[in-house]
Image (tube, rainbow, N blue to C red; front, side, top):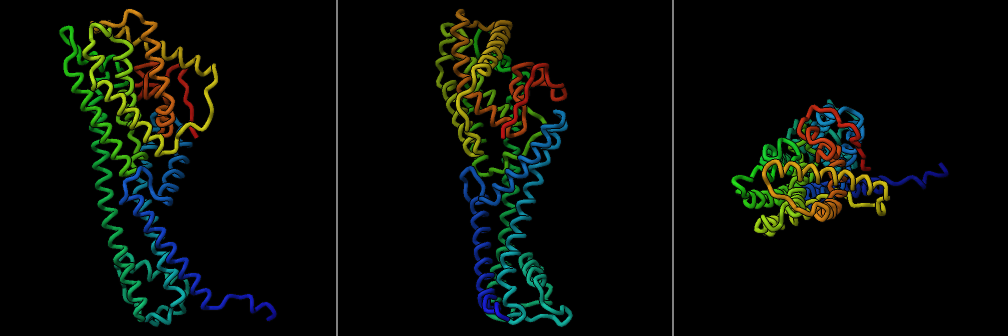
Length: 398
């Protein structure tokens, strides 16, 4: 044939398949290292692609559902992603080792007569039973090189299964800790996002009792939650059905509390609390945690400054929340600022600083802003079954 010389030789094909197999195995090893062994806030390239593709697709669909159904369906993503990740690793390893076996079959192997002609399937079959350490014995390596490769594959399968079990246990341990932290805020914040109620909860006999200690514990808790997300990025995609167990609600409370303390409380009457280092510590820590989480998910702002109508509506919403907070504090007997305009300016500046990244973070995780903050209706943030309040807007972040 005139073009026969253009066809690759058997040696060339064997070399190409070997290089492809080794490259795939090294890629899987790198991804496992990045995802399971190294704590850096992001998973390996294959894992990250899998997580984000599944989450964004499912989230896009679920935002078209009612509030309760959205949270119930999103709740299943994390538990499904974990075994899917392990299954993906197993498939990639099987394929990678099969690429090494195929060009050497049947010459380097003892093959039972019942198998018949060797095809691609036999190399995948042998790779699969070797990785899972089943080893039926109908195909066995004969050459020293293939025996070594099969030994490496069996050890890789055992190591992957061991790492998967350890990773699963550590992820669910971190999730348990995350729920415990969320529950610590739950009743103090009126079973919702009532920051005024959270602060008034510690007010008795004309003074605040234990609020500084609560803020100190909360600072430590959110720092531990950040470390959990850095070590196990898949935790982002474990979406609790109850909004109050979600990280966006916890971050909102830890960011809003110091904003209210500085902007609403009488600075002369409660000077010790307003100037207490624990108040500044939790504010700085919460902003740091939020910044790290937003960066790890790639949610940094990609557009320019917001338009004036948006700023105007936000200012109206913030003003209404500020006045509502002042009213609740006064009803609890707490002295508030005499100059409410100056207090609002301090409150507005604080919320303007952290609200936008927190809103993007909350929306990416499947929450609408009102159910996290209760800005339009505090009952909506407290009652998981309540319909969206009139005027509540859900904005989706791509």
